Length: 259
Image (cartoon, rainbow, N blue to C red):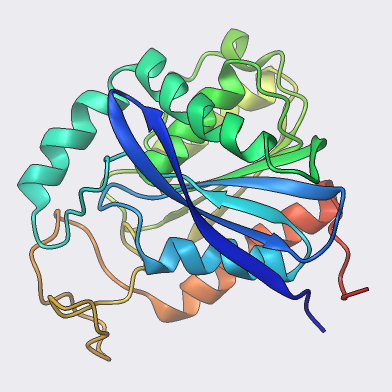
């Protein structure tokens, strides 16, 4: 069984823009464990909204943040990179964007600040990692093909939550070697971490190809322009999501069935 849920858009200010996030929560008073979700560089789409809904069905309050001010960059990789690259080069800016969304999540009645986790994809993974590095007391952080911050143990010494990091073996933007170098710093800092490298997967391997109108193509090859090294891998999509759910259930302990 699953919890009955409600969803709504939430509007908030960040980075000088009006952001419209997607909030999903179980029907009831709580307290509920809370999860902040960061989308990848293309923008907040139905895939990330659906992730928030699925988590709410499992007994989590989930907010899919937004950090492009309503812009969506499907088929426009140059415009996306023009927005994303300056962002991920500025840790303070990423933290401010993430903090604004986190404040919205924690203001939801029933959200439990003592059972807090974050999930991020691509640049959204960079944002949630920066929040953890800044001292947000996440019990769990899951980052899938993120841009990685500097691998210095001293930056992660105060982290108390468990980290899950995942990437594809063929991802040119978050390579296995980069990931293992970063986790060496986590290890030296005493962080509880785990890594999954998905064989044959490329960057954004979870994103199914779509037509310009948003409908699924039904294939595995993208028909719109993307950055190099992006490819869909349906089997690893399921495996990566299962790993995220295992981490969240282990660390912040959502109820498994409806009341």
